[in-house]
Length: 348
Image (cartoon, rainbow, N blue to C red; front, side, top):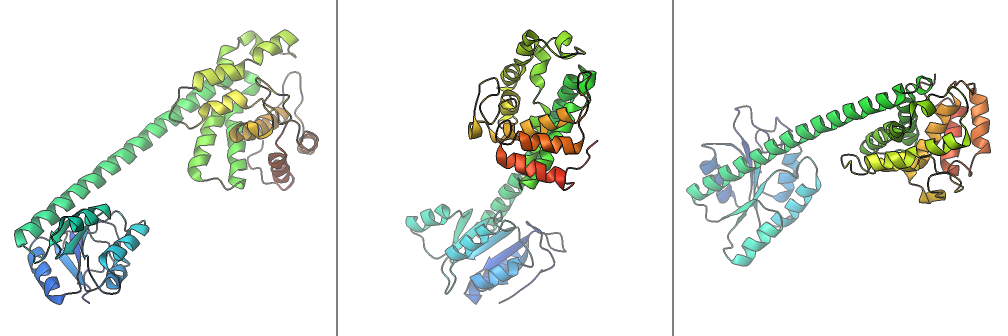
């Protein structure tokens, strides 16, 4: 076994010389020497004599490309490749199989395993150099394009978030008594789902859904939204339209998964007596059940012309009273626990 250039653990590594790093794996020492002699004119080359040694080497440095003997004792090329593809830090490294087989079935098998290419033994210098340089170039281009796509996706997400925040602020600004409501609801929602151990991507998504849960109020007149007294039955019937208005506005927004669910269903009740559809229990989307809890909390904890703000003990009593009627029992229990144990942060 020969081990060289073990100073880097970065995918697609270059050696201290700045040249691409190539790992050659072959149980035949003669083949290793020939491959090194051919490749070292353009690349820094590390050579190992078994699949086991190759896996050990990858813990020290991740090369730009791996030339892997297909037929080796103990751990053959196919099994070695399978293990490499299971490790996130290694699996993007392109693999060229080395084989003495020239039949079409071997070629087909190499590509079906996910190999970038294959080189037939005995090695032809021009063929080896050509195939190695081509694969390095192609995969470098792929990585560059993936980086560009990730950056563009990040920019689009940031633009989307900025737009959502602007919309949420516009909604809240229409009613001075609920100023900041959408942000506060979104903040409480995030704290709830963190207690539920949601993944970061899911948390980010429901945060944005919560920010837009009241977007349907855009379609409700200021006279009703800003009325400094309790609404009449007719006026309440009008304001009850805002979930369906919001759902219609958001139904074609594809950048956020299930974004319309928060707007459309956040006034449904667990016992089926909510609106606009009278959905019951787990027929109500989970994100809407969570937003319902956060939305109700902010309503209780805010001062309106017709309603004084409740203190935390009163709010806890109200959530206990409404367990299984207005609120999902499991979410209700969790939220009461959070309130009782001071786990809800940034409460005004």
